[in-house]
Length: 441
Figure 1 (tube, rainbow, N blue to C red):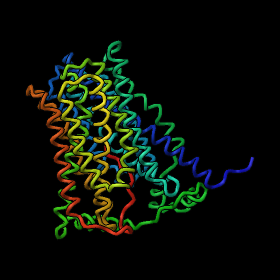
Figure 2 (cartoon, helix red, strand yellow):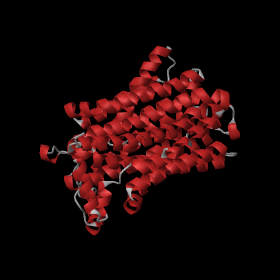
Figure 3 (cartoon, one colour):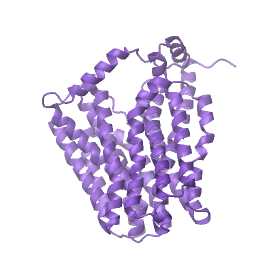
Figure 4 (cartoon, rainbow, N blue to C red):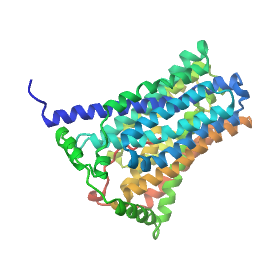
């Protein structure tokens, strides 16, 4: 048998890396969404004496952990490598789910969700970096978009785990399922290659060059660590020079509202639909339909942005999301509600992505990565606030206002990203960044 050509080898390696990272992100999504899927049962059975406001706090613990994980992932990965960090994140959120499964109090359960959040927050940006390194030339955007579908597939899986296990085995069984990715960690450690960017940064250029040549992937350029640190600081300061600070704050505000909406709805959708009078089985089916919409939205958003422009699509998507979320506060026939949930998933889960695309397009090339990174980081504070807000509204017997509050967050993001887009000057095609699908979670 003749040896594989370099391009064929590259395709095989890309398939291996994307496949392993896709499974890791699938487990990430399962662990993230499982809390929202079991929450109606926890509240109805008053497990741990759980109240709605405490439930909102618990939802925020995971997203706060994700904030910590996302902010520290880059530094840790630069020290130990992206492969080791991915394996560590899978182990961490799997063991943390075990803590939740054996928890005998709200405090212990909250500790488990916080630790899980750290692992979840560190995994996704690292996985995106890995698949970017090994994507075939010119296919990075498609590969990242494919990777992001795994998170929503995990959300679908979480709903079925809850539907199949809660009645016969109890809510703890659902969290024991989230421990099973521990069995995947050795597979990841054995077969996932190290990041080319990490090898180059650590001076292991011969090893990186051999991999890049053998598998026909592009070798990242080496960067000076001292210059890199100075550049990062200068680029951050550059976001606030002159009139740029207004634009920066508009992007950050839009991202805050967007992730408040994403994580608020992800946490409270089954509970709020249950409060609207739907049976628990139907409420969990909404999670499946919502995430199916998310997968479709991730695949469609880039095409729409390429044709009509990311700023315009971002504003329109948020307006449609707000309309859909608000409509969910009205009890409609089941078929109509399912359609609205699906379309809301399509627009909600990709509206935030369009913020990142807008920032990428409108930013100067030299500080583009910094602008997108900080916009994502500031948005994560909204991810912490969203679950807490839903809990507070339910605790005050204002559950009907839950969807309205999240819809207002969508409208605010529409306004902020719309103003920012109108204020931003046009750039030449040479300055435009490729509109890659960036992780929203």
